[in-house]
Structures are given as C-alpha cells and as structure tokens.
Length: 146
Image 1: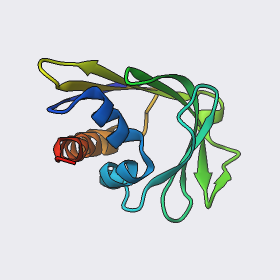
Image 2: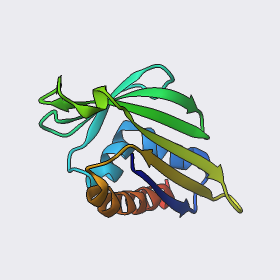
Image 3: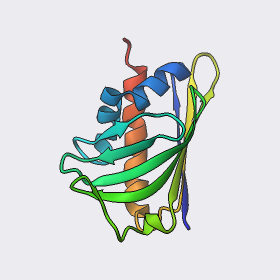
Image 4: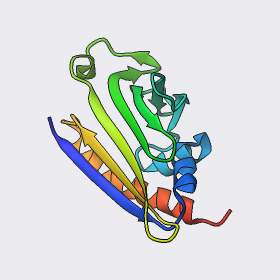
C-alpha cells in the first residue's frame, strides 16, 4: 500500500480554507486539477457517504470516517463509479484507500493544510502531478479577498 503526503501554507484563516475546500462551488474550482467539471454529492459529516464525480458520472465513492469542523476530515474510499453506478470489481471493495485532510492554524491568521493518502497504488504519477496543482488553486482561491 502506497502512501502520499501533500501540503500547502495558505495566508487565510482556517475557516476560510475549510469553506473554500469543502463548499460545493469552491470544490468545483480547485478540483479542476483532477478533472474539469468535478463535483461531489453528499454531506461532509461522519458516517455519511460522498460521491466524487466527473461530468460523465465516473468517480469514487467514500465514507466520511471523521469530520471535525476546521480541524480534520478523514475519508475511506470504498468504490469506483462508472456512469454513476458502482463497479462490482473495484479493488476498493476489498481494500479501501484513505484520505485525511488536516487543517492547522499557522502564524498570524494563516493555515497549514496537509493531505495524507494511503492505499493509492496505481495512481501515484497522476496524484503526484495533480495534487500540488490542486493545492495551489485552493491556495489562490482562499487567499482571494471576499
């Protein structure tokens, strides 16, 4: 099982970074790095299911294992979706992958965002090329004055 870690320092309060990352409109903006038109369905609450989709309905399904406002979100990726339907042969059904987002208050009114991924074999080159771009887009979004 491969692990990856990405992080970014953002000159904005934790609440602003949280909102830009998890709000449906903000999410659509910064996740363009992964796929233009990306969106999610569901709620960011412990025990809830989320579906991360592209415009064709392809994507991933996750369970929110933990969600502490302005502190931490932990997801368990439990399946792949094609045209909005679960794939019966998804390796994630046997061995889920995990994503954890940690929001830490930094000096002044800044935020450190750390992203930790576990069990992402097969996607390492894609993740290594897209997560840094996505985090820079999130940084720009959060640092833009309201």
